[in-house]
Length: 311
Image 1: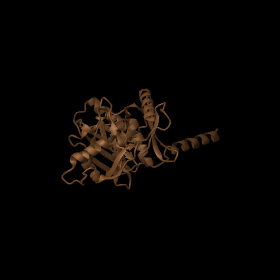
Image 2: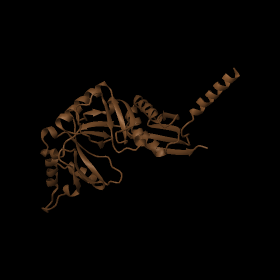
Image 3: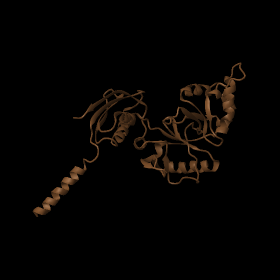
């Protein structure tokens, strides 16, 4: 009996110590977030608090999230071993995921030429828009062209020049121009033309996501796998089926940045499961999965952040 008790005590000791495996918290991070808009109701604020709790639970076991008395701020307090910038990005990422049909480069060429012509001055050899283009997309692709990061604001101004929209066929008036995500070490950004539906919205939004997790693709690159609800799966099957038949790409957009715009190679995707790629690191993919699964939040600003080392 004494021998048996000794075994049980040993097993209990192993079980308790195993709970402490992995990096231990080495800091306390306190963050105060403030809404950019004061239009949130108490119900909406409470829902945002719950979203933030879900996100932080992925990086800390000891945390507290609550709305401040004035109702316009949320206070976060957590113990963690993760970098403070990672935590900041995790709690401020809006997490807006959208899927858009894309226009192909050649479909938008007449519009681009019209924009350039309108902007031209007296000099015949001047091309205000095209002179900013570093490289052009390919026929059948969704990238219109690439420009230097420093010129993106100017290009966006050019694209909204009055009169240019007349060169867009009626069914193409609902277009949204967005830049692609900046790649490390590359100073050029790709421009995409995305289709809006009749309600002036994307084809599908992240509200249909039931699950999101970090995985690896066949080349061992970090990805985010998403699983949609029944409604999302139905829309996704229809969208990917049309993309296959009509040979257009589907832009995967997070917070108004195009992360990728893959084509569909083998018919409609059934079941509502898909992968998001975007040259992620493992940490980035893990955090995006946490953000997408927890749900989106409005834009908020960090008004205070303190980091205190644990002794």
